[in-house]
Length: 254
Image 1: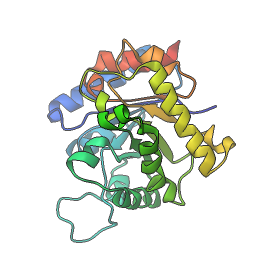
Image 2: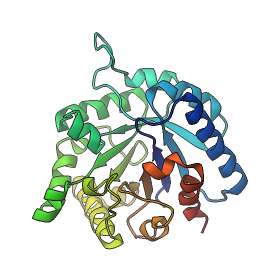
Image 3: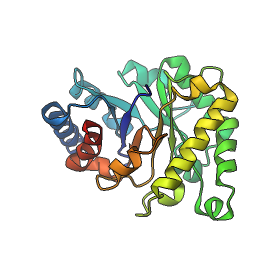
């Protein structure tokens, strides 16, 4: 059975006190209310990672970084290496988020290097793929995602279902209030699983966790998570509110 995961990407939000308070609330609510088996991950800003690792130690919540360097070490001012993250107790890292691709111009080549560095360090990765509105409207959105996977993730020898989670995030549905329909979500998740089958095998493809990452909230989570090839969500804005985030997680109580 594929692992179910709900991850919260806090992006560049919250100050230290707010981050600690939010994590404390999520930890408490899950302990009191959650009876499911889905894995829960939160990804705060770099500067809060150490504090949240300590706060959440012994709980059911894992901590992810939102990015890591493509280099192992060296004169790269402002960068944070995968080994540094592991030394702090971080277990996961998000790689290839659409905002990193578009705003910071990260390429498939640099993302491939990041995946390899993260896996070498022992981190599990959440690898993001997704199409723009132009790609969607032109009808080549499946090819776009195939290219993103083929040119980066699928070029790495270290990838397997134990250390890699794939997140489909339609760029046109992130922070816009728009949400892909359940049929659109299922179509792409199914296509991604077919791509994994073509690269590896059907058996391996059936073990990969694939998350949906486009404006998922407590109102639509149940229907989206109910799709055959959807294994959870990479949650943005709704993860900044403890009740909303826990309500999404509790979809897997049912």
